[in-house]
Length: 280
Image 1: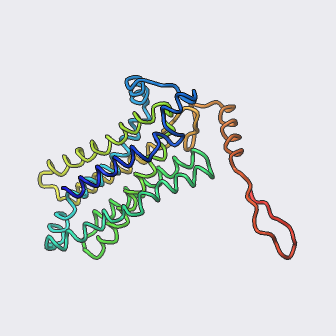
Image 2: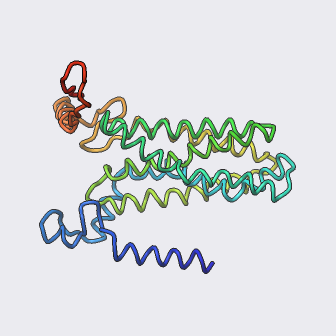
Image 3: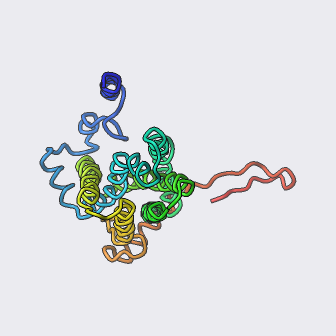
């Protein structure tokens, strides 16, 4: 406890000393420059909590980070009982799930940024839908594995989906209510912990149901959370497939603004033609 506690304390001190409050700079400096308006914590919380999309993202985060917390708690025991492994071997295999955090969570954020650059906000929603759907399908397949040889690679694939979904979720969060991003982030983050409690109850009160069937139920819930992504409608942003909250003129203006952000890039000179190629 001393080492992780000291590391957390050192990290907090470094953040206070060396980091900015927001990507645009420190809040106190932004307020002085009239770049933002100073708000009370109460009004900010009211704005963030009042958005339906905030709670939808909280559900989806519960279906990825909440699943991660649940799996971290039960996976070693699952391998012990399901495949009759000793605890050391089962724990080693289960650690592969957490090991994917090294890169997989960043993949979700990277894909969200990449698709946003190419397709606008629809791209972010598309990545969110795809990551959650992939996670749910991989979890379902993992729950049906009857051999350890099949379970290990599916555990890894499932873990990648979980972590990527976490990254893609927070790729959407800043767009929900830019003036209350902190409140929105707090609710969404709490959704992960609440989700872990809910999934834990499924295992706690499963009765005679085998644990693999509990995982299958969770996979269905994850797939459901993916399927509601097309119904995520954020003010001033297009939906994944349809945008009933926006007029045709607003959609045209959004698309035009997105196209304006695509800066042409100059490719290396063609030696034969002796010309520069411009690529949009």
